[in-house]
Image 1 (tube, one colour):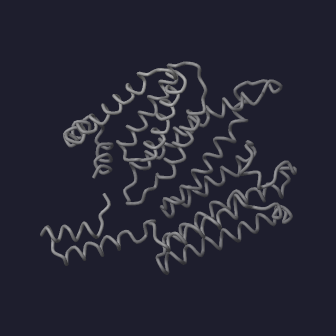
Image 2 (image 1 turned 120 degrees about the vertical axis):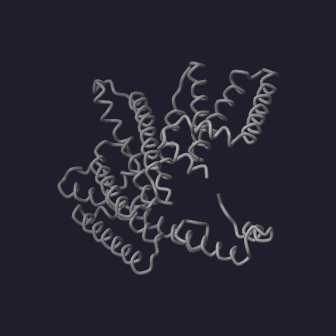
Image 3 (image 1 turned 120 degrees about the horizontal axis):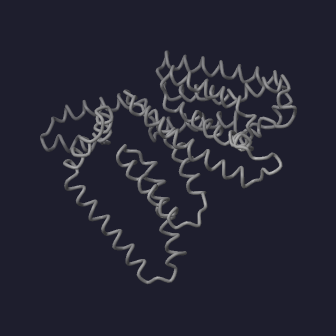
Length: 354
């Protein structure tokens, strides 16, 4: 629940608390939230500068860096990483500037694949097959060593600093890894080398994305349950997990009406899960999926039907009636539902809904 200064002053005017207590509470809330990301000019500058620096060392890396050679790339990335980590430590200990420090620590994670690439290049692993800029453009299982090293560094830094923003490069790398594993899995699943085509890769990639995204969501949920701090440590994992899972599911083609209806049901379930665990990302993508399914029914299945819009209207109004019923009996329904879940999960859900 978001509390505004106007709400506190309104409570004071209704004699629920004194004006002095309202002022003290507002100062207390400001002090508690000063290190949380918000839409203020200083935080915008922090993230803008950080994203530019992160992009410079990843997405916008130019081919000119290849002239430095493998050892040069390794040394440059190591110097950058050490400098960023030391500066972050200084900002944390001296000035308690958590947000810029976390951005600098994130830069250390982003520099890890560059350093590993430099090392591999120095020992002629790549044999001029790819350059570092291709890491963000092409899918290939040979990037796996860079990704595994990045995951290891990210996990270590997350355990050390407990910052939610550090999960962003970790989630990105896990997504890259799921894609780069696909060529290896195609061979592992027994496709003959001469028979491998784009369709094989695409189908396996869909399956990998689907299950990998689901795994990331489960990991995010487990972290969410174990998290005792006020930091949202699972946001980025939920985002990339749902995006990977839903993207793979939505890209699958089927001529079966039953499968398309099951797709609709999965998206409906996503909305329900999002409401239960208070995660908007499930609701947003679930809503997009349902909209896509209804569009398919409207333009393909019931293209010339006069009754379909009326049927949808009735369904929509029925959902509104269910919402009204839910709102009037929400407390009793929540109590009933919470009694049917394990105690550990019950505490988590009670916390999320307060």
